[in-house]
Amino acid sequence: MAVRTLSSRVRDLVAFLLAATAVLLLLLLVTYHPADPSVNSAGEGPIQNWVGVVGAILADLLYQAVGWGAHLGVVAAIVFAVVMVRGIELGGATSRAIGATMGVVSICALFELSLHEWDGPFLPGGLLGAAVGGAARKLLSYVGSAIVLIAVLVSALFLVLRLSPRELAVGTWRAIRRTAIAFGGFARGIRREISP
Image 1: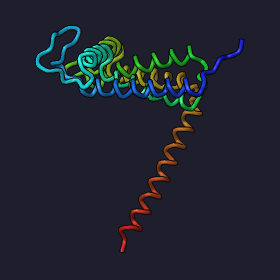
Image 2: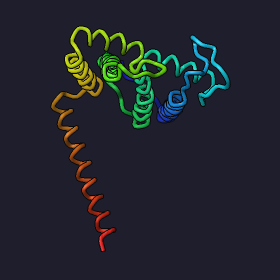
Image 3: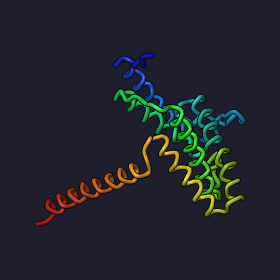
């Protein structure tokens, strides 16, 4: 059976819609205000959220569910927009979905683990992070749960990016090296400009 590919115009339209979704999602998350209306409160005064009542409710639901992990939705929308524009075919949808799920769960749990004393309007890892991070901390203590959750996060990256541990390490090293070389060249240029 032949794999159907989307036409260039449809891909561009989907990419544009994903980028708009990323902007809206970012705005509704960063302009979240606990006094805005939500599913469990009527709210007081004018709505502070820049995306209105819908943004206030969505922000509240996302922060209550996954805490700071809600910002991963912005990253995902941007990544998928780039994938659509570049026409990249994503194979291995099942393993990528499993990896993405593992990544969200581990990041939420790590937020909860590292910021468990934070006193904000929502739990740092949301209800998901509180459940997984709390259980991990009780079973493995702080250090053990941090090691396990970081290992799960790295494994999730392997599944999502479809890289071997060696490829990920080499790619990371090359990126660090290129950044250091570029920064060194930039610093030399600045020194030449400011030296008498």
